[in-house]
Image (tube, rainbow, N blue to C red):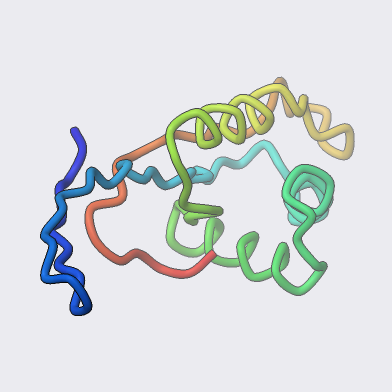
Length: 114
C-alpha cells in the first residue's frame, strides 16, 4: 500500500499528489546457533558494515532478540533477507545447522537507525 502526499509549489501554486513507495525493515533474529564472530563477519560481508556497526548489531540481536539491519524498498529488503538466509551455518559451532533467521516487516514510521 502506497502513501500519498500532496505537494504545492510556492512559485506556481500548482498542487500535485505523489505516491510514496512503502519501506520495509530487514530484521535479524537471535538464536543460539551462531557466535558473535559469525554475526560480525556476515554483516561486514553482506552489508559492508564496519566492525563497530556489526558488533553493535550483534549485541542488540543477542540482548533484545532482534535488530533492524536496514530499511529499504521491498525488492532490496527481500534480497537482503535472502542473503542472510543463504549465508550458511557457523563453522565455529558443531550444532549450527544453518543460517540465521531474518524477516521483513513494514516500516510504519521512523524506526531505529541501522
